[in-house]
Length: 244
Ligand code: FPP
Image 1 (cartoon, rainbow, N blue to C red):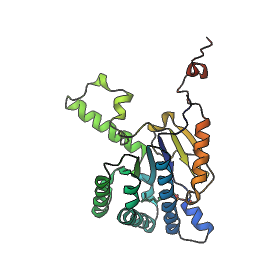
Image 2: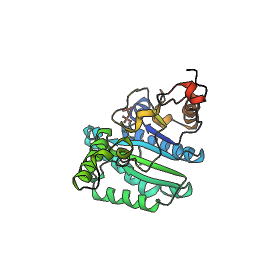
Image 3: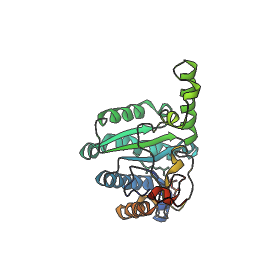
């Protein structure tokens, strides 16, 4: 089944550090440039009618980075949430955070909730920012909710299936994930949206994230438009010409 525009794109925004070191800049400068690239991509997705964009901003594994870099990333998040929210309103963008937010300092958690609330009525595009997120964490937290529902008698064992599982994942309000993009030449999933990626199309590019511009997005979308999504069926079945 071919469909030209993905409803939901996920991006691993990789390569900020390498982009900075190629220019003799600090890693923090690389993340700042990464934020600028993200702002352009969000607008471009909204304008193209893409309904959801999920980006990996901080993984459960990123706590292992030097404390100074972790601090700089949190400062950048807080700065963006304080100064860059006007364009969310102008472009009809709803912001959501997915991940275990309880690990963040209260001021940052509060700001995250505040912007989520202020943008909750926007419908052009949902931007889900994954912070302290891991695909394993998501499946474990969903499983715990399911176990609690069974224990409380609100859910029967026989009612647990892939569809019901999805309603407990942190992405439950988003459309199915159509396209996964990773920049900087790495070809790994890195514990991002493990469950949700089951039928997604994958696109890897050598471009470092801060250089990922409109032309790069267009290239990913053009590739996607050429892919045939068969969901385990044959081309003939999908085109209605069954040769058996
Ligand atoms: C990976 O590049 C990038 C990150 C871990 C951080 C991504 C964050 C941003 C782009 C800022 C987003 C801001 C908001 C408010 C959502 P890397 O550091 O691993 O690069 P390297 O592999 O070249 O070292």
